Image (cartoon, rainbow, N blue to C red; front, side, top):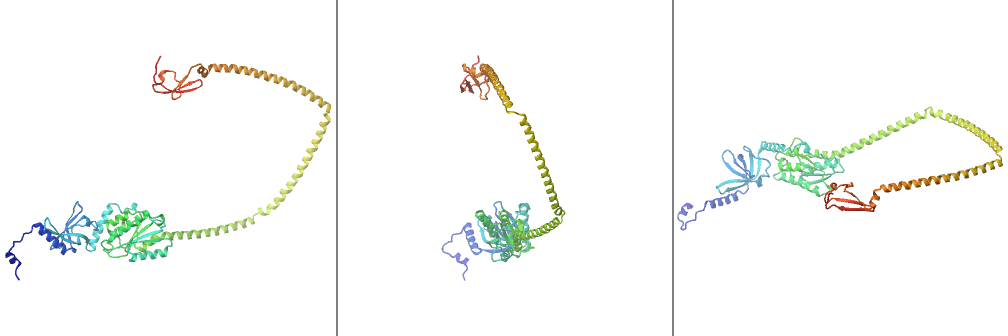
Length: 463
């Protein structure tokens, strides 16, 4: 086999040399084709978060190192902020940075390795959101007392949804479920859960009042720290806090805690416990109604016994034996008073008849007629005198009234106005007696004997 180097020495036609850019471009194409998607595990060193939003760092395993870059379009999906010394598993592709001829890894996904690394990432996110006060109790919304429509954000194939469905079917008759299916573990699970929460809120904006979702249960069954990691993502936590629908976080078992538990309006240790929280209001109402019903029956029974005792006590009271005798005494006294009144009226009537007979005897018809005639004559004379006196008094008063009217008419301003004079008033109704009281262009009112004039002063001239 001949050496390619020796063959090139005997080429009849000289080959054109490649430029540095061309060789770097060809190497880049070959590397990207051969390493389009690889997983690399190593420790982060020299981590830099640039102002542009890109991340730059180096992966090393003690013997070798590999430069890496994670651009802003990819790092928003990463669930934590990387730092030096963190052991990570990286997925991406190898490429070449042509200006320097350096090959590097373009990172698309980055995950911490091991339980210890996950715990560090968890505490990092928890500290960041805690400083922003996203966990404060005053931000948590109260759950509706009697929810009618409950949304469940979880996997339709997981045990969590079936546990919630079983509890609500057993304990309530008025709550309806709306499943919003999503993945609950894996690289994009956190984003799918976030989109499901956004979808529920968007649905409530346009839904009729009776069809709106009253509360959301977001969760899944138990699992390892890596299985539950989707519920620790920062973007999901912010969406839970921004939701207009109250959210119950029900992730894993009672000992499992996620960022979603801290930011949600209520934490349930398990999905079944979340269903119990939703159903407890209906149980409380039923228990309250049953208790009040029992209290009402007991109170009615007590009132009946008390009324029966009061009736027996009244039946044995002395008033029921004494009252008939009192009625008899009152009847006898009434009859006695009636008889005495009848006797007194009869005596009064007899005395009046005797007095009338005496008066009739003293008055004779002739004497009575003479007195009546004299009285009529006297009455006629007095009437004539009265008429004369009244006429004289009226004439005197009429004469006096004419004199007074003449005096009043002489003093009246209207009489003066009738002789051609006038009276001028300003806008306030005050009488103007001097040109100094009025200004140019002022409105005035002129009173004549038979009406008023509205005028404007164009010029004033003092005498």
